Amino acid sequence: MRRSAGPALGRLMKRGAEALESAGRRAAAARSRPPQASCKIETLAIHGGEQHDPGHGAVFPPITTATSFVRPSLEEGGSFGYSRCANPTRHAYETALAALEGGSSCVATASGMAATSLALELMEHGSHVIVMNGVYGGTFRLFEKVRRSTMGLEFTYLDLNDTESVRKAIRPNTRMIWAESPTNPLLGLVDIRKLAHDVQTRGPDSAQVEKILLCVDNTFATAWNQQPLKLGADVVMISSSKFIGGHSDMTGGALVTNDEALGSKLKFLNGAIGGIANPFDAYLALRGMKTLAVRMERQCSNAAKVAAFLEGHPQVTEVHYPGLPSSPHFDLCKRQMRTGGSVVTIRLRSSQGEADGAGALRRFFDRLRIWQLVESLGGVESMINHSASMSHASMTPEARAAVGIFDTTLRLSVGIEDVDDLIQDLGEALAA
Image 1 (cartoon, rainbow, N blue to C red):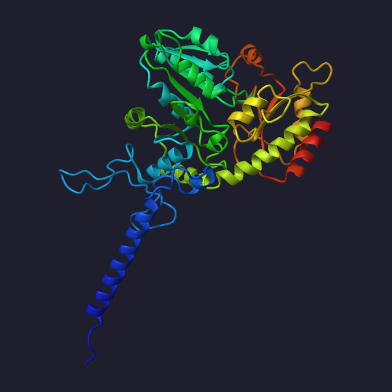
Image 2: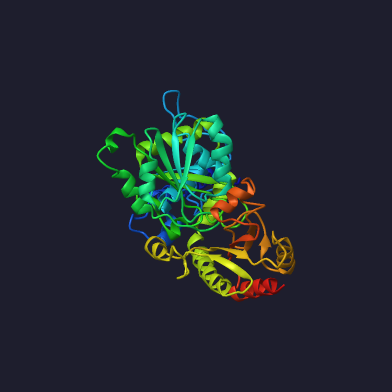
């Protein structure tokens, strides 16, 4: 009589499962060892943070969609309990992004504006904020049309490179300085190191004033181009929908800090308010971040060539790009950033008799074949934003003009296509 293979097969399967579990633990242990602090951005973008998979040792962290996690016991809580407060996929992404920015803590949010809103929650009602002149239109809208009324916040807009004016603008209730560098869309830079130093050492009476947080919107530069925390900033804000995701297929934001107490407070606030990044967007952002360095290298190289072409074109009256020697921010760009970035902003020349340039704009966009007219930026494809009707539509024409944004101002987010094709497409459209 043939003996049943059941017991032997069971033992074999058990040994296989134990071997797989052991291999998983070894892989997880290896993955859980963070890369050295001295690792370059290119390495951190791929290996930074806690991206290990304790279950199977997967090379890339899986998407965990569970809303709740089983507690080991009544007395003992697990690493995760409820996904609004913490989620394995979001945790992998947050720790990786923190490492990339040179921080110790990160909270990932549902959008860049959710991250900006969360930063404002660090202040009490009635606080005063000093803001970089010419910030992103969505930031301006949040500050002026929402938080002035809902939190009683007060905002003063200044050139943050004029640190003497910044010092004079500080009030007893000043709690934050909001910088954007480069600014959207005119690409103005803030000397972050000097600003941080001058605010932190603002005179003998500074001890009487509560600490002022320096928050820097690093969306346009990314950590590949500059690391504001290492220059003295307290918090970095990122709209990860842009270059971090990099493929125009996810929406998200994040706040990063290297202050443990501040990081703990932000985690509490993010969980309490609930504007968190969902697992799918966290997964896409982490996946995109792994190619950040190679994408930025190509996009910034393309942008420099596009900017040089546009600077000499007769149909272009202004070119804003900090990597151009003619830029007023060129020296600061060389000190603070790796390159001039991958965004170029221009102002088209209007035809005679066209006060608003509407005809010139129509002819320009009708001839484009590669560049796409879209709201956002930072993807692998080259995109153009019409600032007056898109990114800064919430501002009045007078407010836009005051910061240098006009009806013929266009923001170009340069992609990874062949740069000669991009320049030819622009040249043909400008000829129209």
